[in-house]
Each structure stands twice: as structure tokens, then as C-alpha cells.
Length: 247
Image 1: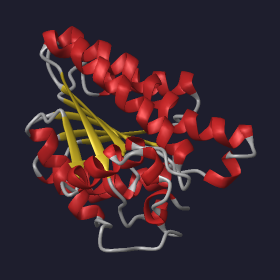
Image 2: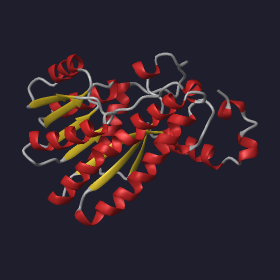
Image 3: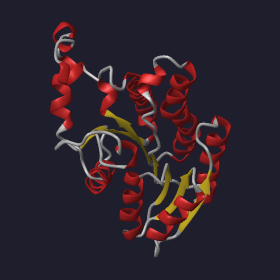
Image 4: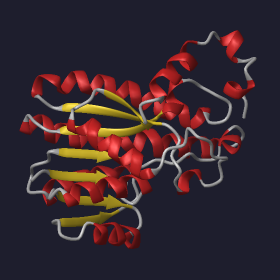
């Protein structure tokens, strides 16, 4: 039985991951912002040992406290910590409103750091475990449609690279989960196409990536070759390709 903490457990994707792990018999500590949604996810995990805690991750002091409390709730041992929260925000508003730009960065980067600092130290002390963090393919290249969000996710990718190398001697793995678009409430207003994954598919791929202690996993896998092309397209050409650089 693994001891697992999930931050952002009420997201559609994380809830599916939690249900998979509960069915496997893991002990879960679920953390999210909305107590009612947390209770619903915990109910889906019936049969497993589950505890919950609520709090706003954008309050950095509270986020840090939630990480410490989560470790304590599992008796001081953590086998897997999954950080799954995030918010696309309003890109066009962020181009004119500094407060919105700052909120997007706070939610998608700084609040994650506030969790990772205490979690990394706890796993480093126990010299085992896995930190897994959901980022986004939006961090692979700045595009007008989501570059504020993408910049936060890109910064998180670099942070995780450094953290992975730091924790390697302690036997702690760090898995970066680069999600493509998923059909969830967060993308409800976005036109859907064949590249959108279901929450169930995303949860399965996340579970497998963590189990094999992957360094970087694209979810679903087909985003790896797609983003290789996007990342390496020369800027003058990229700007002329509306399907890549348009809104």
C-alpha cells in the first residue's frame, strides 16, 4: 500500500487518478479548494483509507502549510505526491490587466513552488518517493492564445529540471507530466478537436508515467512528436502559420 498525497484532487483528471489509486488499495490524502467537491472525490474512493484537507493554494503560506499537514496526515511517509492544480486564466485580459497576469503566474507557478519546497525536503529526508507535477504543452512555446499561462508552465518545467537533479542522489524521482488539451470543465469554452483527450485517458497515462518513474511524459503520448515540430519551427515561419500562432 502506497501513501499518496494529491493536491488539486478535485480537478476532473486528478479525481480519475485518485479513483484508480483507491481501487488499488493506496492510502490517500486529498487536498483541494472546495470541501464539497473534495467530499465527492473521497466518496468515489470508498474502500480505501482517505483523508482530506481544504485550502487555497494561491495563498502561499497556506499552500506550504497544506504540504506539511499532508505529510503528517500520512504518518510522515509519502510514496507519491501529485500536484495537479492549475488554471488557464483569461489570456486577453492578462495582456492589459497586471493583476490577472500575476494571478495566472501565482496559480500555475508560485503556488506549485510553495508545495514543492516542503514536499521535496520531506522526500529528501526519507530518501525515497516520487514527486509528480502536471504541467502543460503550452509551456513548450509561447503562442498568442495562452502565452501568460504557457510562461508559468514553462518556468515550472525548468524548476522541475533542477529539482530532479537535486533529488537524484537521494533516490527521489521527479516526473513532469506535460498535458495536452483534455475535455474537462477547465476547457469547456474551447472548441474541441480530435487531439483532446478524455480525463480517463489522461488519468491512465499519468498513472503509468508515475509507476515507471518517467522523467518527462507527454499526456497523451502523441504530443511529444507534435511539440517537437512546434518547438523547432523557425520564428519567421511560425508567425506565418496561423494554426500555430493564431488566437
